[in-house]
Image (cartoon, rainbow, N blue to C red; front, side, top):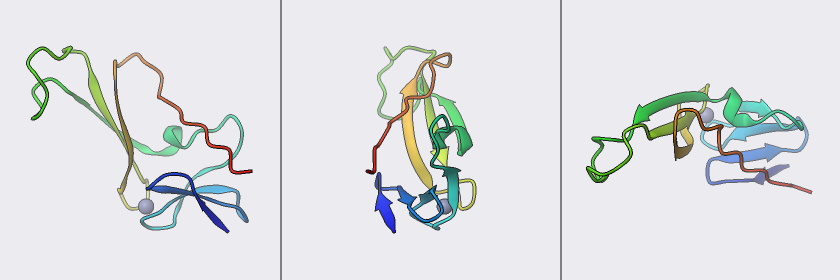
Amino acid sequence: MMTRISPSLSAESSSGDICCNACNSSVAPNTPGVHWKDKAVLVSRQVFGMPGWPESVHRDLVLREFMCPACGHLLDSEVALPEDPFLYDVVATE
Ligand SMILES: [Zn+2]
């Protein structure tokens, strides 16, 4: 059974994997201590100069985009300083 945990990810109960909703490939095992963001493809870009962001934005801020390793679908994104740890969402499915 698939439990949707975000618009882009589901938890597969039989395999215990976190799966991409676009292609159903496994992104990461759904195990304590493992986060799917560590298994996704990460593209990190400077926010300064992007359309929609003011000149006053902190020049070090980066946009992190986490993509499915199988199909490249965008799974999640976050804005952070380069040295910040990933922002982990923890979802309990039971
Ligand atoms: Zn995918």
